[in-house]
Length: 219
Image (tube, rainbow, N blue to C red; front, side):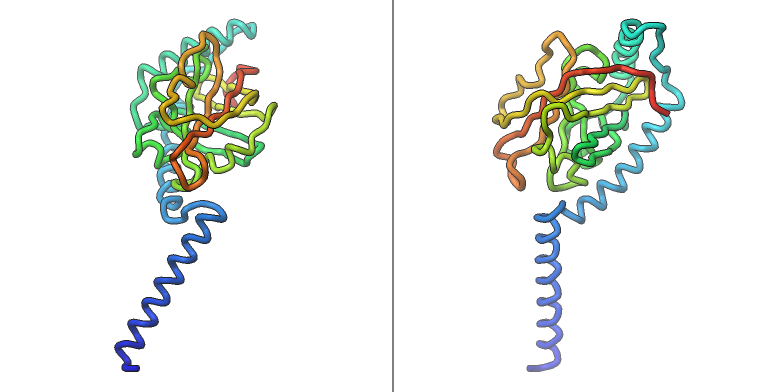
């Protein structure tokens, strides 16, 4: 074999190993290249959220009912001020080890930064349905383990104006066309959605959670 062919062979074998490694990592965890990009974008969202926490009013009230009313008022205010692709809060799901800055919007660019809030739904504390979507294999894969959530698991949304805690009570697989799952039900509930099954967007996995508590922001 000539020296040139030997070099080409080494390059092709190396490239093949890199591809195999990338596939293996994606199958075992999440797609590495887009996750690096997502991590950089998360840093920017963290900055957005930190700025909001420093400047946005906090819900207050001598009673739980008044605190909730104030949180609803501030949720509506933030909804009128925030733009697509901007950081709006933080999401924590202890049962699956998820902790991410939350972005406004579910378009492609927004979801590359982290879990995104459906702009057509209310913000946490509004008293309406709150919809949040996230990837399962790319761009940090924040909802990779969404199908492992069980009844009673907590989902915490730390907004600039209040901390809201939800409890999972249902989960099901739906068709992508079933947008009615995020329709307002005249009471507050949280709906988390992600593509299903893994490595496919044929269906959606939806988790439903009820609001349990509204407290002052955790700083």
